[in-house]
Length: 162
Image (cartoon, rainbow, N blue to C red; front, side, top):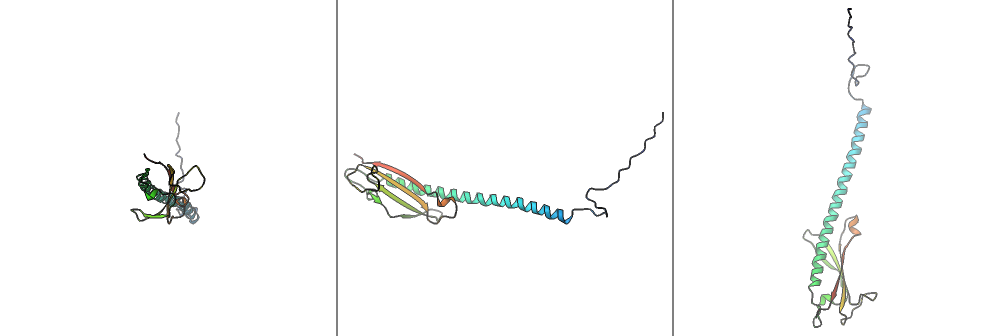
């Protein structure tokens, strides 16, 4: 048995070729691809801007915590004994103090010394043996964002030494 094999001819037409023989992308396809690319690029830029803002906020928060720790250590080292009480530990609301950090940011330090924390309000009574000291540090000129709403704050309690 003799079989004859006939070759199959497949026309050589590219999917990008048009009927008139021109190949490539149409202007509509290029504009749509460019629009999709720009939308993706806008998302990437938005993420970068968010990261930069978030990192700047964390940096200023770390700086304010450094200022807060320095102020807390200063008040912890102040004398509070039956014979001597440093002026830093006298009761009342202290005027805000401006501290400039190493990077040039200005922080406002607000200190409140309450001689009788069991009573509402801020009392000044030199005979009391227990003090509650509240320290709040906030960025003086915050940029918009979460930095404005989150000052650094701590509360110290001191008992008169023997």
